[in-house]
Length: 413
Image (cartoon, rainbow, N blue to C red; front, side, top):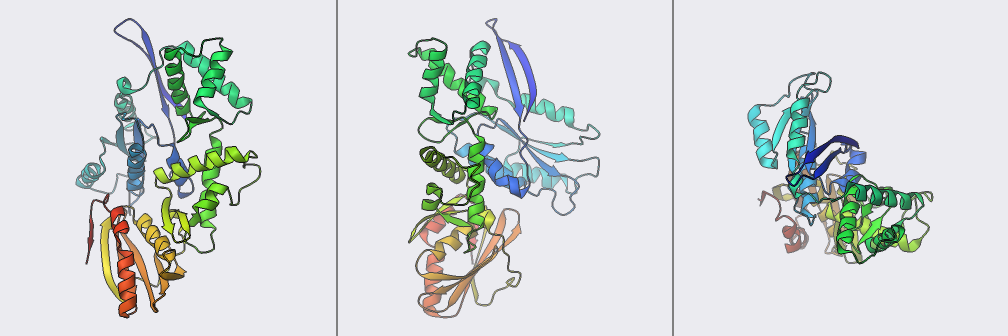
């Protein structure tokens, strides 16, 4: 994280306002991609970077991050205007290998506000991009702290609490402790509002993290990332290969994690786990699926085992084509079928799953991503009427179809 810009503006009433823009660099590699989605809340201007050198898919990952941004904004209570720019990097190596018409089509489809071709080495497009960032911040819509001195005092107080080892507190308790340290009455409405705003500004610097419930503030926010990563790894290590973990086990902390990273206070750990799980669900990094034995957290990204031998499975009878989160849909169905009581999982891969039906016979499904964000889902089964009917009805149930309502396109043949 860097301070990208800081400027002082004279307001019409003669006061001065300091405006500071912070630039966060979120890694795009798969190992970091999941957890970094948790830091998209409060984004004002987003830059989605693509590699202009790629001759196969220069827009790889663009749809993923565009969707992650939409999901983060959907979960926010605030309605702060934001801008989203598509940026082609390393233009000095070679021009982007797609037509301008395709670029404009992608921008319309994903709602981009601008497109920039850049080269850090040569400086191409950098000035224009920087100006777009500066002009893209809707300053009048952002919360304000009326006193720079007050902000610095509150920031110093919070940093002091962090360094003293304070882990978790309600915003109300933090406010009372601050007022006590400043020997200020706690019933001052303006100070209370200013304190809340300052906590939000300090959160934007990554120093604290407000939890999703209870008006709680985490003063060691790196712990949330540690627990989120541990949950992802636990789902990846599950022996059934479904990339899932029982929500009861997740909330109880019943998964492997280094002792040096785990909280010793079980009450605090419980609260942090509840909040972390809710954040993972809200950002759709995990999906909640209900089986006959209780709810499960499904991590679609952790299905990694592929079966290359099913490009055209025998017994294929139904094909669904759709646009949207391809792997998420497949993982949701795979876990649901495994825990519905009608089928027993036989084999599980990233792109296919087979089951044994309680009525007899085998059945399964195969997923094929035709391009990023578009896919085909094929159902196949032995030609037994009972098996065919049970699998078709369960796979295309009403609750499944409800998950598809947000997709731009869904059709079956």
